[in-house]
Amino acid sequence: MRLGILIAAIALGTIAVAACGSGSTTVGSTERIWDPDDSTKVVKTDDEWRTQLSEEEYHVTREKGTERAFTGRYWDHHEHGNYHCVCCDNLLFTSDTKFESGTGWPSFYQPAVASNVGEVSDRSFGWNRTEVICNRCDAHLGHVFDDGPNPTGLRYCINSVSLTFKKE
Image (tube, rainbow, N blue to C red):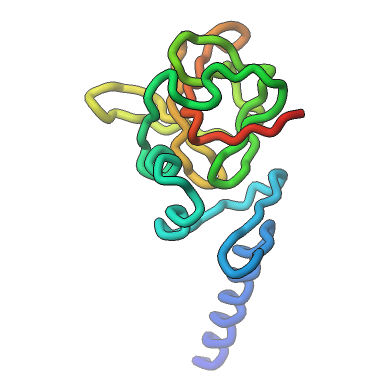
């Protein structure tokens, strides 16, 4: 009986390890390249994130920081293409939905793929806001507000440092 339970536990552990590795390729001993079409959750330790990200990228995406307005690389960016998560390369927004909000941060009226972006209630600093996160790696991206343009009326106010851009 105990041997059967032990064998079942080992089998389940092997399946879990195999499942965690799907969708990624190990390069060298630490770096991973993620398939943008794969929705497998990306989970890393703080040390792994610190190794991968710059100090500012880590602060904003992993510690829910905010870059100063009008300082990010994409607030006044007008090229045609796609904006991806700096942490896991998940497709987040397209230039087709980017608009000038006057806030000093890149603003979009909708995500490229709704399921790639999550929303979390944020009551920090005595405000009631909605935090925007990457659904693949839980990176903090910014906040969403209900003062955007048509067709959605939403303004996804996103930190440039949480994004990478891929020109089409």
